[in-house]
Amino acid sequence: MLRARAIPVARVAVSGTRRVGLASYSTNLGVPSSSTTTTTTTTRGMSTTTSGSESLYEFGQRHVTNGLGRITQGIMTKGEGSYVFYDDGRKMLDFTCGIGVTNLGHVNHRVSTAAAEQCMKIVHAQCSIAMHEPYLRLIERLLPIMPDPSLDSFFFWNSGSEAVEAAIKMSRVITGKQNIICMQGAYHGRTFGAMAVTKSKTIYSKGVAPLMPGVFSIPYPFWHQLRLPPTTPTATLVSLCLYQLDLVLSQQSAPSDTAAILVEPVLGEGGYVPAPAEFLQGLRTLCDKHGILLIIDEVQSGFGRTGRYFSITESGVRPDILTIAKGLGNGFPISGVVSRKELTDKLTPGTLGGTYAGNAVSCAAAVAVADVMREEKILDNVQARSKELFASLKSLQSDSTVGRFILDVRGRGLMVGVEFAAPPGPEREHDVAVQEGVPKDMATRIAKKCIEKGMLILTTSVYEVIRFIPPLNVSAEDMKKGTKIFEEAVREVVKEG
Image (tube, one colour):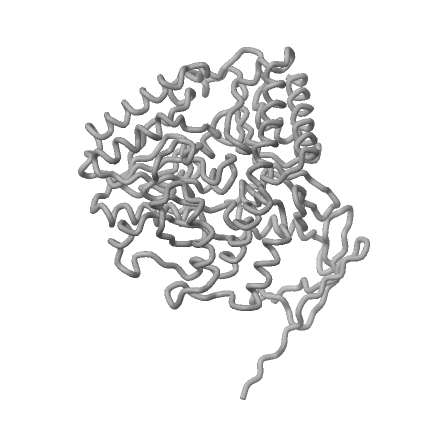
């Protein structure tokens, strides 16, 4: 009988600037060697290996695909609450939450403990083989907080993109129709179907056409998209967009061919723009009239981010299909597609599935997330910190020195966008946000300065927008610290011109 040769597990001891572990690789297999242990040291904060002169970071630069972009250099090694730590000793206030994921802070004790305990029970209880307890316990936790009691049928997958893919597939199967209407500026993911309904930036689909057919788009009720001033009345924006929807249904995709309308109640990647309740209600009315399903994408806005469990609740609109992800697992990969049983009963078993769908560890983490949200009154903190954030940003907007450069402060809860003006240029010939004397690339430069000052923050959209996505349990002290860093960065960029 052949016996497998044991491969020693890497042991890492952190003491001062010295780290020891397995770091050599087989030249032909690309896997850790079973016989060679190399020493890793930290030189000026950068891990290096004695097997070569390049740092671990440089190793990553050579071997991690160029298709990934990053906003910082170095290696992130640890997270704790509202902060992350790098291998060079940097401690950064994180107002990105991994793009709206670690809503309860990094390494939340209750969530990580629940996941660890589940790891010692069963990790992979494949969803097409059997049900498992965390999956069912998660449904128990979610049912009472759904935006409408009709939402009672659940499928858990791994990512937001996959949830959108499932929603599109379900809508086509359930209705027997094929076309999907989405929104300009929308972001729904990078997989092929999700990419086809993503309209926020061309980078996500550049060079990969033809995309999934049967997709049509209308403007979102955002003044920028309609080339109107920021002061345009909501009723005007809503009326114009619903009229464009009527035109699409009469000119491009007949109601009898239209399976679903897909919309984010708060436009995410497109600029952090909340949809007016009247617009969402108008979509619901039209869907009911024509037998079209309304898919509400709350991958980013859901699970407390806007101060409610789900942003759509504010409008009183009933989704036919709801997609959720990101904050649901606080870093553990999980997404959900929720509908009503009368619709999902039309699906044939096997229509949905996936190797890792509804992973037991991720479901256990999500159960803990739901418990923490309820028991620690997280939504109350969102409301309190949101008021502080908006007050700070509005104060900056009214400042005599820098206020004229801030076009808009918008959002819900702790999903907040700040849009800056842009300088004239050939690429902005028709842009209503253009002003003379405005510094170039304001959002990007401000975000970079925030990072230099110790805070992670992101830009978003094709416009000059910075988005605030702090943890939902962020303290008043850290919120004040973050807004102070942001204000300093804005003033410095304006001064530099």
